[in-house]
Length: 464
View 1: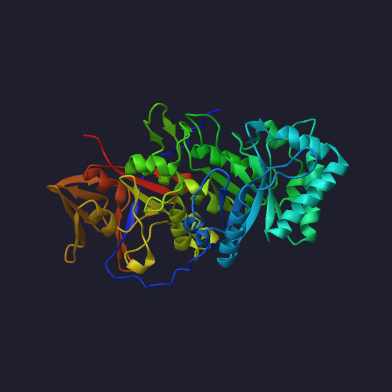
View 2: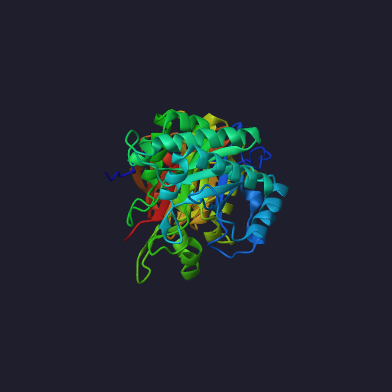
């Protein structure tokens, strides 16, 4: 069932700093509120021919090298690019990044791999041989773990799936390695697809974490924000700790199957949209703003994000990985409560970045559930002139022949000398003026939208 993940923003307030705030040193990295936030990139070595030097392992915590293919007799298909994997491991380990081998996948040479897994897992002897071969490869390539990508066990094979998980997990444990799995997302917080509902508690306990494939639902609703919400909630409701859940995010479109980097190459504006009128097939995908909202959601409710496939990212200011890394750097110092009140701002489709170092203030949600935002940066970003008249205690804003006067302590603002009522009084606190964002931007021809689940404010020019 479709869900509409939108909410109304009643009244917004913002905070204006006339004096610089004390500077602080942001803690860069991926340590968030006392825990590791995973940033995982699939690297499909058999599908792409990208030079390894382009892979930014310094911005990732894990690389999933795809794919290691099983055979029905318990042996493995030889890797097509073994030297590439060795080079990747060396590069990643130098940056402190782990490398896992992704075992399986959906198809191999146009043939589904589920029957192969079924045959191997059903036989104790083949299962044992298979696990020995996997562990030997892990040791030979100095890998950090294995991701099981059996898509998908069914009611007849789930017992064999569990046996494989438990035995493979125990064998990897003896090597000091980890085991994860790629599992389905869900369209309901309590009702998942059969493939997800079949996964046993023993399996979930055995996995060090899971990568949730919250995508490929259908073409028009390929990977909407609400699907990420319900997918996280489903696995949380299954009792899985938040830190063991990693939210999967796609870097490709449907039904065109165009990659994010190719869409942006066609039109840089496509980076800030979730739809492109490509031909012969349209493209529904996740642009930077949706991916940022999903990352914020994962910061609050999960243990990380996963990108499939990292080779499909760009290398410039539209890079998804760079966006994630920047967001983590700006929020690493926040407590859990502060993180839940952290606000991002998108102005005319592009993020308006706030940082403490600027001394202009950072948006946040106050104790009354109001959005507080520094006034100067967003208003000057749209070309407004902002000042403060000390004798009359008024904030003065001018743009395109419109003058706003915001008197401190009154329930009105003046728009070109026309009095407009507001329901909260602007005030000065700690040397800063708080003024109503919504009323001000509306007077200047801008609309305001609020996405509460990702605590994101969208400011956009209203249609005339």
